[in-house]
Amino acid sequence: MKEVNSKIVLDFIPQNIKEDVSYHDRITVRAILLDERNFICLHQIKRDDIFGKLTYLETPGGGKEKEESLEDGLRREILEELGYTIEILAYLGEVKDTYDLIKQRNDVHFFLAKIKEDTHHLHRVSRGDSLIEKSLRLPLKEVIKRYENYEDQPLLNVVKRRELPFFKNLVDKLDILV
Image (tube, rainbow, N blue to C red; front, side, top):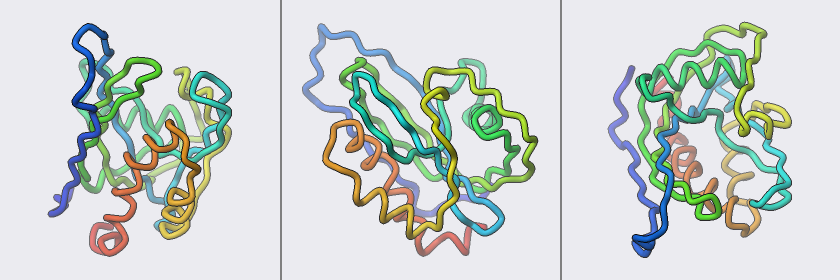
């Protein structure tokens, strides 16, 4: 796995979280996943719940199991959600954020990975997996454009500020890393 000289570390945890409010802590792993053309694989998420009625793009990934390494958790999540085995190319960095509506603090680890093989077998098991409407493959510049045009909505703001810096950081580095 290659080292990225400019790892991103972002902390969006509000400093005014009340001590008497209990938050659930969750470690997650996400991939900027490349196909054979170096297009980015993303999920189109469709939801109608407490976060709102929304359709948006999000990187594949999810919660790390207690006994797993970050890398093994990412491999499992990509296999479950997309049916792909992957090669992890680089660790890109980490974001700490919150979903205040559900009182959850997230420690999100991002990796750059490439599809190795399509097993043609999905095993979507989590509540989050059920929100995946479809998966898309888009050029990096198109991904950035779509994220930049997200409407001003609380959940979309979390996704945008969590993921967009990683996409922008790859613009000049993608050819070097793959």
